[in-house]
Amino acid sequence: MSKLVTVINGPNLNLLGLREPEIYGHDTLADVEEECSKLAQALGMSCRFQQSNHEGQIIDWIQAARDDAVGIVINPAAFSHTSIGILDALHTFEGPVLEVHVSNIHKRESFRHHSYVSHRAEGVIAGFGVQGYSMAIQRMATLLQGS
Ligand code: DQA
Image (tube, rainbow, N blue to C red; front, side, top):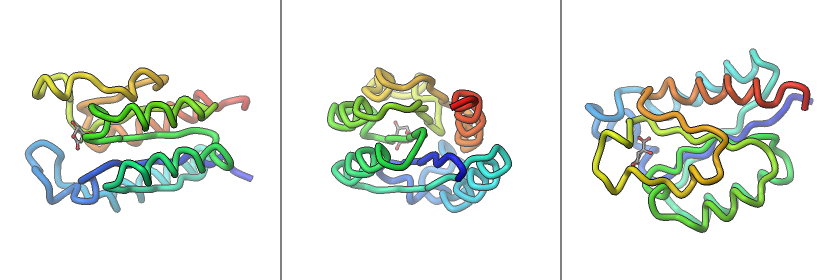
C-alpha cells in the first residue's frame, strides 16, 4: 500500500485563484490537488487533499491522520497566526509535518510573521506560490525514505 500524505488547507483557501490573485496567483485549489496527486503517485505515495474554514474540523482531520497518514503537509492559512489548538493537534502526530504558505508571510504585515505551526513543522515553505505544495510533497518523499 502506498504511503498516505494528507494535505490540509485552512480558511479561505477554497477561494484560491479568485481571492487576491496579485498575492496568491491564479491557480485554484483543484489545480493544486491535481498536481500534488500526480507528483505523490510518481514518488510512490498517495495524497489526500482537505480544506476547511473551521478550526475544529482541521483539528479533527489532524487527529484522524494519526490512524492512516505517514505525513502531513499543511497550509493553516490565517490559523497559522492564531491557533495553539492546531499546534497541539500536530504535536500528537508522529510523522513529518511540513508547513506551506503560498505568499511570503515574512514580507507581509507583521501579524503574519509568526506561525504557531512552525514550532512543530520540520520545514516551512513560503513565497513560492502554489509550487510550494509540490516542493513540500517532494521533501516529504525524501523524509519518508526508508520508513
Ligand atoms: C497564507 C498566508 C496567511 O497569512 C493567510 O492568512 C492565508 C494564506 C498563504 O498561503 O500565503 O490565508 O497561509
